[in-house]
Amino acid sequence: MSDQDKPRGTLTVRISAMPGDTNANGDIFGGWVLSRMDQAGGIAAIERAHGRVVTIAVDAMKFIRPVKVGDVLEVYTLVESIGRTSMKIHVEAWARRFMTRHHEKVTDANFTFVAIDENGRPRPIPQA
Image 1 (tube, rainbow, N blue to C red):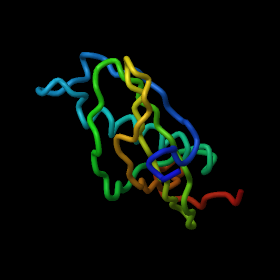
Image 2: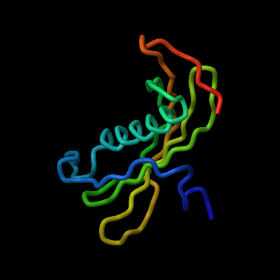
Image 3: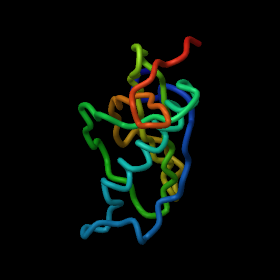
């Protein structure tokens, strides 16, 4: 089974794609997908950092397939590495197709998050 056949990580966000989320071509707007991925990555980062985080980078995002109205977008996260104040989280978006229920990867990226304190300054990430 290849990397494309099965998601990496933990299911973190699951949401239905609706008509109001489409671009001019009738596909789901890429920014909507990116937003859900950032949300899922943030959830995973907050859980690992035990507090507030901010997104500082998104690396190598490539849209593989479109998301259509009615599809269920499933976003998976995996903490790949942890530094002193930052962490990289691999985020994959998969679509469960509306009529066929076929499950396929639509995009992935690596997000970098920094743990911050109440003043918005970087803070150390606690050890596991």
